[in-house]
Length: 99
Image (tube, rainbow, N blue to C red; front, side):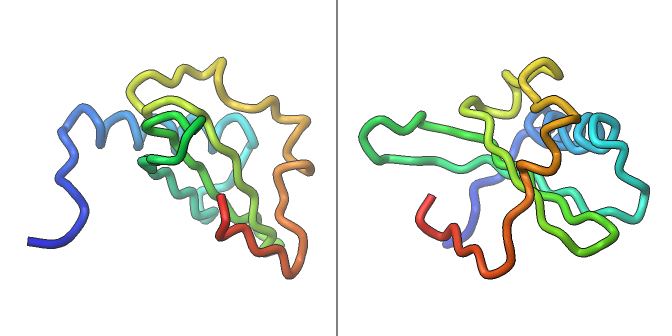
């Protein structure tokens, strides 16, 4: 059967925890969408599993950051500082399908 592998309850809990930590870190309101995903990479030099966090502010600006660890290993200290939020914004027309 095709599709994403099932995540353990611990993995799902880690993804939810990271979503809430991101929401607190950047002071995001309850209506802001925060997505957290683990992505496997087989390219040389890539970590075998990285975690990507994406969120959109009320103005519709998309922000994104990666942590080069599985979600279960990430601590709050691994998240970017709140003052970096502007640098996490993707400019209009930015296409990051490559990485």
